[in-house]
Every structure is written in C-alpha cells, then in structure tokens.
Length: 500
Image (cartoon, rainbow, N blue to C red; front, side, top):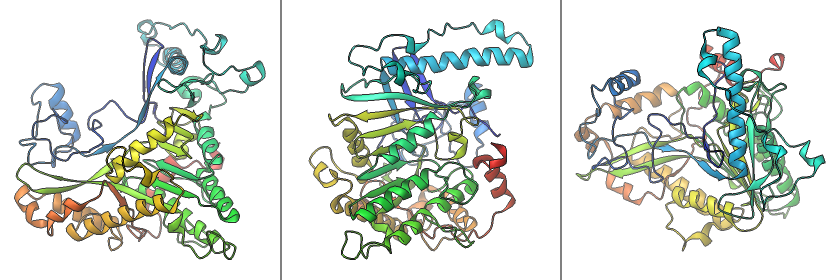
C-alpha cells in the first residue's frame, strides 16, 4: 500500500534497453492515434479490460483459465479500450548496461533480503548474477570521457553515454531507490534531481506530460519542490521581460478521484485557506508586478501556463460518433528542445523521495543535432492533429506567441466543441465528482443506439483538432475540505517531515 516496485524497463544482453512509463499489463497497449473503434481487431485483439459491468478480476481469471478470450461482441460498434498515452525510450550501449546494472543490483538484493525474511528456500531458485560494476570500465568510444573527480560525483546510474540514434545526444540513467527496494542507503534520488536540473536549465519553455502532479511551493506537506522550481523560472522570465511558456498535460481524472484533487490543487485550483495558491494563481501574482511596457505587462497567467487533458473522438463502422478520455500515464519533461527526462516517476513524493516507490528513467541532453526537438514535434503533431513536416514551422518555437496561441486555441476550441456535443466531458459547470461520475456512468450504460441520439449534432466532432482539451479551472472545484479518503491518500502520496 505504501510503497511500490514502480520501475518499468526491459534490458537484453546488457546492450539494449527500453525505459519509461509503460507497464507490460492489460489495458496499456495503444497507438498514438488512440482509436476508439477497431473493426478488424488490428489494434486491440483479445480481452477488453474496460467492459461495462464486468470486474477486472473476472476478466483476468477468464483469460488465464482459457474460458473466454474475447468479451467484446463487436469492435466495430463498441469502444474496445480506454485510450492510453504513454512514453518510453529505447537505449543502446552504455546506457543499456546501466539499466542492466540496476536490474542486477536489485535482483541480488531481493534474493538476499527475501531469503533473510522468509527463509523459504527462494534463494536457491534465484541464482546470483555477477555485478560486473559498470563504471570501472573505460567509456565506449564516442562517449564523453569522465575524469576521476567527476566519476565520484555521478549517481549510481553510471556514466554519460551516447544516445542510440543520435551521436550528439548524451544520456544518463536515473533512479529512485531505497533500502527496501534495492539495498541503497541513503536512498538514491537522482530521478528527482534530474527533474529539478531540467527545470532549472529552462530559458524558453517547459513541456510536461504527467499522470500525477502533486508538488509544493512553500506550504503544505509535499516534500518535492518541482512546482516551486517552475515558478522560479516563471518569475525570472517576467522580471527579464522575456517570452517563456509552460505546457502541462495531465489526465482528466485518475483511478482515485481524491488523488486528482491534489493535482488540481497544485496546478489550477486554489486551496480554501488563506495563502494556499496554485501555480496558475502564483504566476498571476507575479504578472501583476511586471514592469510597465515589458513583454508581460498586462497579461494573464493563462498566457504563460497551459494545463490540458486529452480526448479522442472516433466514428464506428456504421457512422456513429463516440468520445473517450485519453488516460495520460506518461512521465515526461522536455526543456528548450535541449533536455528531456523520460521514466517511470510521477511528480509526487512517492516517486521522488527514494525510500518509497522505486523508479527508473533517463535524462537526455541534445548537443545540437535536433533529436529532442524531433521528439517534441512528434508528440505535438499527435496532440494538435498536425500532419508530418509541413506544419512544423507553426510550433517550431514553443516560447513564441504563435506556437502558444495555436496550442491554446486548439485546446479551447476542442473544450467548447466537446462541451456542446456531450454532457459528460469536463467543463466549469461540473463542480463536484458525484455529478461528473453520474453523467459519465449514465452515458456508459447506454446501448450504441441510445448513445447515437444522446450526443447533440455529433457530426460536428469531425472538426475536432487533434486530442488536446483545455482543463477547465473550475471543474470539480467544489471540494472545500479534505474527506477521510483525501487524508488517507495524502498520507500515501505526500511525505510529512516527521517521516523523513
């Protein structure tokens, strides 16, 4: 309950590795198009995890007992899966060897620790793997050389190493690892340090995709200060009168609504007590102090910070339109087209303090060949519904008014479109979770024929531009005090000082 083995990676022969946010589990496979219908079962063959009225456990039991391989009658008319946004990175060479180092260290620790705790003979079934410590070897040709002084300061993740596809892109493996999860004491927090480092380097823009965003700006119980680091960069840009943009993409809601409360509280909704200001409000306070005649004079915080979610609109074989929320599970930050962090860590204390959830990721540095820019453009084309290549100039400079206005207008237009066609998608008029859940459940319970008439002029969904939807600032905003469940979640996702 309190801690989780949260690393998500695969490594082969210490030479190739995949690291990121994707779990190898039911419901996680998807494509960037996030289709809602799949007539030929080309994208989502097999069991549908999200069948209305059927428990997840029952579906899994049926699958492994070979009783029923498919519980969807018609993928041509029934939405077959919850769209899923995730990001991973493929690594080769020294970086992959570092991922292997992480696996070997944890395998040997669990082998030892489990045997000590249970004494059930499991040790005999877990052969010890030779460590072959990575950083005693010479760097691979082409990798950046590291002197002895620097070698002593690098985190256990290992040495910088070349990116698999781009010679000028460097990479370092980063982790959250503690005594319970890997025998590391004191806990390693290089994953958190990588996020702080990336934000601190920002001069033009910050782009984030995150499942959770629970952080601290000077008050509250959260230990991590990612939000405060972002706020400092915003203040720097305002003081200097220079363009600077912050793009954040989060899910509409996570599995437990009470956790989403803390994300909204961090980003776009003020607390009820005096001085409990969200990131958006704090940027607004800073903007009021902008110098007369400067770039930021007279501007609102929405001109610097955009918080969005993702939705998909799709048409069935019979021509019936459907709308579905895309669950943002990715854990990515991109800064100035120069730095990226991709991994398994959410922005919350569970992921960052080291002694709680174990995490694994990679921080990438682009030395000028455009590899991280290409990565960002690939994501943005998907979210904005842009064709490859010939529209890149519209979003080439994320800090510019042109790019930010295009992003904001697309997100706002999609919000207005969905709000006018449906009754169950986010909007400011839905102010509490019970109301939202009732509307969502009411629509989900309808048959395809009933759904066809439940939408207002659904053919207008043809005009939806990409997947980006502005997150309404008043959506579910009536939560005025923490319930018992909120306090229970807070104890798990926030770290109070007395527990350090």
